[in-house]
Image (cartoon, rainbow, N blue to C red; front, side, top):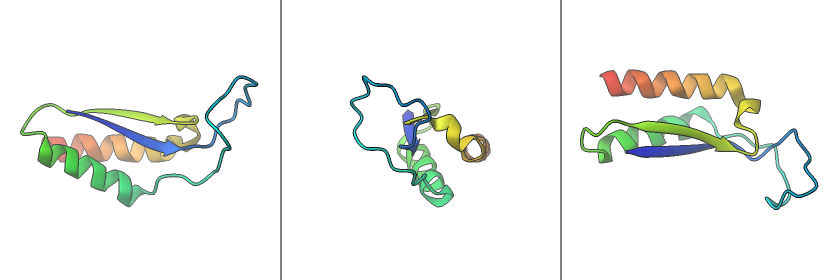
Length: 78
């Protein structure tokens, strides 16, 4: 099972060729990420879960990335 979490649309690059549209700085909240992980695990039928972090620049939300990675690992081991 593959799950992609879009942590933020914000980006710190400002590339002239970007076609991602106007940026906004709202980040995914922890509850939404946790719900996505739980749903993926429930629907995955015991299949290993691969979590990808996406966004404008997901490392702008590094603390949230770590929280959700830890949560995914803990839920998968439970």
